[in-house]
Length: 411
Image (cartoon, rainbow, N blue to C red):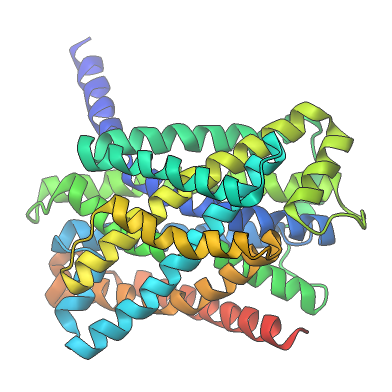
């Protein structure tokens, strides 16, 4: 009995330490993912199932390295960059990171506005304002109550997102053979390459890489080398693994739903038309859950994005702007896009292209720092991990260059 109680206590204490990876994982189920995954399924059926699997495996490695950097060095990734860079380089680096943060915020606010339009018929601009205001309240929780209550709220929204997008799989299960066949890596023309790049660009997101290092450091501190740090790193592996498994399952559900329900329909060219098609095919409940999942995705991800932006500025420039004020500043570009009447789904896609520019700036320093023995000590990356990490950087960078080229050239 005593041994059972000790095992239970260990499991419970380990569970309490989980959380930072689930906050970062919100970036992997944001409105940009919804747009790219539904487009992939509607246009190519099960063809790109393998991209979801590959993207989440790569994201898991990247997020673990980010969390490890924070735990071992006591620095967030932006702080580590600041420590190694000259002032002009820091300013340039911050400029691109800030641009990426605004593009992220654009996608999240537009996604929330689309969801409110689908649910209540609200004008997109009003929906964007409401999304921004609600996200401010979520940030106030973090500001006044600390990280753990903020994590609980985000975890609750992640649960809503999961239900919203997984429900369709139970209402109308997809083809098992089609899903298994989609695990074989292949493309079908230029457009499928573009969509694959967009799916990966929407999955491995720069702000999540920056944020996770800070979340891990703030939650666990900087334990000295030894049993405590080893245990925290082990728990972090589980934290990242479980978070990526959940995010990957939700992303897979989006694609499988579209492949099963929307494949071959000529009227699916946006999130709004996809929602209408799901409602027609699977019924109003499925349509409602899809819209609710999208709304939760927009609200959670815009809060996490603003939090990441504040951490980036603090780390690189040692300048602190209150989260709520920052929320107001970064909300302006998104509201301007909605006020100008830009097609919201197109705005989502363009935001993913802008994000693509920032991915190498986050990944290359991360791999270099975690492979530096002087910085990481005995917790430096093994050579095999470093090799895999550089391969991930190469694949993601190449695909995002392809995404940028194909989008700009219109091919």
